[in-house]
Each structure stands twice: as C-alpha cells, then as structure tokens.
Length: 122
Image 1: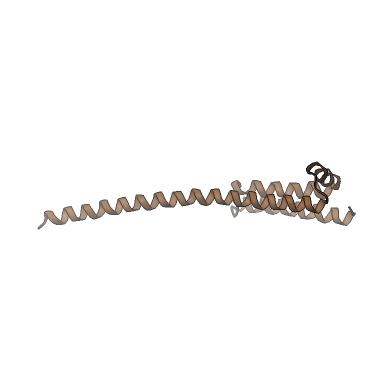
Image 2 (image 1 turned 180 degrees about the horizontal axis):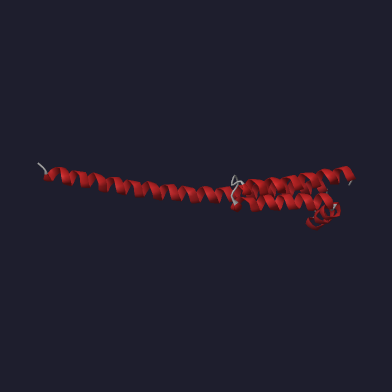
C-alpha cells in the first residue's frame, strides 16, 4: 500500500472519529448511535495504517481479494446499522401505540365526565 493511500485512510478515519465526537458533544447524535460509527472510524484507521491487517483478515475469512473483504465488512456495517434502526423504530412504534391508547382513555373519561355533569343540571 502506498504512503498516499495510508495517509488518506488515516485522515478519513480521524475525520470520521472527530466528526462523531463533535456531533455527540453538540447533541446532534445520541451516544447510543455513536458506538457503531466510532467502531467504523477505528476500523478504517486501523486497516488504513496496517494494510497487513486487512490481508490477514482476508486470508482468515477465506476471501480471494482484499476488496471482497472490504465489501463484506461494508455490507455487515449497513446491516448492523439497519438492525439498530429497526430496533429503535419498533420501540418508538410501541411507545406511540401506548400513548395513543392512553390518550383515548383520557378523552373517553373526559367525555363521560362532561356527560355526567351535563345530565345533572337538567
């Protein structure tokens, strides 16, 4: 791997890590979502600076080319991100359902209270 490629990978990995830290600090990104992005930044930095690590991983998983290994981990990253968002969406969906049910109960109580007080004045 050429030195320019190592420098580019290192700059990209450091920029990603700094960006994640800044986003978490400014409360634009929650800590619960940052762990996956921090792992990606560290992996980019480690593999960019140590190309032999990518070659070793490629041999360990039995891939033919290092690019296949990168695509494999890229797809794994997207799947992990999708799973994380699916879990969050499911949680939010349950919360919305529970809030809607609670609101319906409160409105029904309010309407029955209004009807009861309205009948007593007639």
